[in-house]
Structure formats: structure tokens, C-alpha cells
Length: 329
Image 1 (cartoon, rainbow, N blue to C red):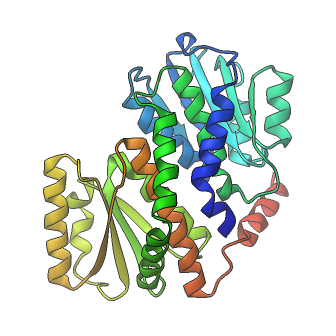
Image 2 (tube, helix red, strand yellow; image 1 turned 45 degrees about the vertical axis):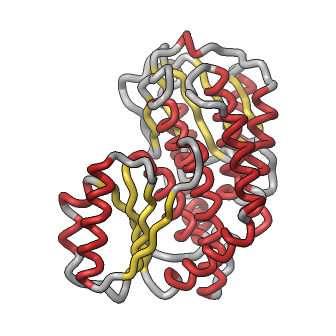
């Protein structure tokens, strides 16, 4: 796990470059919307791509589905992006098969099995990932592929190649500082329940941290978004001040009223005696900021696992649940 975490920028850049040079067998001109289907890390990769597409020059309507069904508006103008590392994810496969005649084309991102066989049989676009790694460590492969695909389709309003080169440079030049920061934050998080706050734009970063602390560190964790948080969850800040550690993900170029909301929320936390830490987004663009955050998040989850004395590898309980569901009809 540690090796894959360390190589996140390298893997991301590598798979982007591979797919940058592959000719696509479809054009975005044929579609009026995009539906992403995927669970866990697959859904998280889709959430980032959705944010990028909706802010890009061709702002197609996008939706990410993380369940057994898909919306009734899906039709022959829908591009379906289906992601499952194993190729067997129950919810993903069922959602895909329920509406076979509703969508026009599929980009299948997988390492094999049912999803791979389906894409080959029905002549859809197959993006095959490496086998033999834990699914959550496969994020940079799937993400790199989709970045290349949607950049080629004209949906990304920045140079992905430049952003990934800058990410690689930053991660190399700041290697020791990033690790020390992760170790320090892990020391704060390990004995508490982490709570993550950020704005809607960076919801994928908050989701990645929650998922990585859940899986790698075996911790309960939750997240909420500013400004919605200020309309409800702010009121819980009357107790639990010794049981939780709050993490803020902030962008120095944030909308000014959200910046003020951060300031006021921290004031409430200080008054109530809560421990909190601020992650300032690093980078020149949205893509750089969210990717550098993931790089730091993954390290933090690893060191938090070490602090808690747990093995960050393996998914025994999740695999048990999957096997039990296989016997259920």
C-alpha cells in the first residue's frame, strides 16, 4: 500500500500519457449528457471528473451513480462511463445491465471479468487497468485514463499535461515536508474521530479522505460542506470537543463569503475547545489542487493506520459481505 501511495503522481501521469496517445472510437458531439457509474474509489474518481467537466468549456450535464439503478432520463444520447476495478462490482454491473438499450456508448474502466467481457462483446471502449493491486490504490490509473479521454473530447479547460507535470515536480521537491505534515496530522487524528469540512468544489477531496481513513486507518469519519454545514451541523458544536478532530480543506482563491464562513466557523470551534487543522490547497489550477490534496490525504491515512497499529492493506469485512450477497437471491 505504501508504495502505491508514494507513486500516485507518477501513476497518474503515466496513465494519462498512455491514453493521450490512443485514438478514441467515439466523439463527444454524439452525446448530450454523461452518466458515471461506480462504487467506492471508482465513484470518487468520477466525482472529480464531474467537477472538472461541469466547469469546463463543454459543460455537459453529468451525474455520478453509486447504486443499483440509473436515472430514467438516460437515453441514446448518454455516454455511460462505468468503472469497476474487479469488473464484478455488484451494484455497478446491475445498474449497467438494467438499461442496456437506453444509452449510446460505454467507456468501461476495469481490470477484467464481467465488465471487460461485456465491453469487448458489445464493441464498447475498453480502458484496461493493471491487475493485482488493491482497488483503492487503482485511483490514479482510472483517473489518468478519464482525464485523457475528456481532455481529448474538449471538456477540460486547462492543460492536463502541464498540471500533472507540476504535481510531479511539487511532490518530489516537497517529499520530506509532505511526510512530516502527514505524520503530525496522523498523531492528532489517531485517537479521535476525524471530521472534514470543505466547499462543494472540493467535495471529492473530502470524500477521498473519509474513504481512506475508513479503509486504510479503520476509522469512523464524516464530512460536510460549507456553506450547507453552517445551516445545520454548526449546532452540534456544543459537545464532543475532546472526541473529534476537525480538518478544513481551504482554497486561498475561495469565494470571499465562504472564506468568511471558514473564519467564523473556526471561531466557534475555538470557543468550544475543539482541535482543528487547516489544509491549504496547493496548486495553480483546480486539477493540481485536488490531486495534491489526494497525495497528502493518502499519506495521512497510512500514517494514521500506523499510529493505530492496524494493517492498511486488506478488506476482509468488505469481501465477506460481498460473498454473503452472492448467495442471496
